[in-house]
Image 1 (cartoon, rainbow, N blue to C red):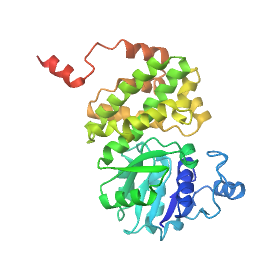
Image 2: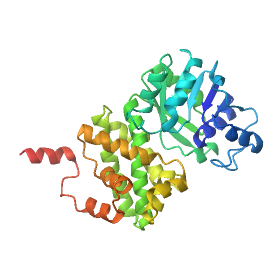
Image 3: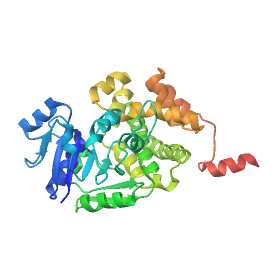
Length: 338
């Protein structure tokens, strides 16, 4: 049995808390929002994010960040915009004997740093493990079979997370490419948002398949430029996470995209859906793309829609009228040199 403190009472944090408690771990859930904790305590569930999922009474609820002290695993289930602040507040209670497990997917807006980089800067004395893969909170909380990957610069820490959280409904693979795992988990939100726009426009399976396939290609291009391994994007944290986020109505990114495709202003669409990581991630990815000189046509067109008053119709026309080329970039480049 492990002592696990989950920071964040959102959907994924709660889903992992429920699963961990069901399999014998001692779990505490923390939130800085007292109303959120009181509502869970009163209702016995997280009605806004996971309606109908009963939260075991053995799970402790707290608004005091010192509840981190003495646990084995500190699980961050925090939206990326707040990870640094929460990490800074939790750091005094985290020791070298603990493991920090992050489940958030995205970049820090001002610095464009990955979440493990942000956590490492604020929590200097404990190993950081990243978890990513196709894992909707709604399904994890119901015990629907799910597979994810964990990666860390500390192999022993990654093995520990695999050992304590693996069970018959939640399978964890190890991956030695933390950069690729984090980038795949972040950038798939851009493609999912774009995929939702296509759905909102009424386009079909052909369009979505093309978008997803070319999407993973540009995700891998940026990932490799940032130090990731190309093969990582063929796995759970790449194509796996992309498939589930582009095709499911559990995906907030896809739902926001559908609204945009139907003509709703992007800001209003995000307001209606809630946290849409693809919105801020698109901005960060576009700036990284320019810095690293990486071709990302889908991200470019989504950036125009979200931040430059571009239209969906113009975006599609721009993508479909790009210069003809070979599908495999390496072949295309070698032909250009001859």
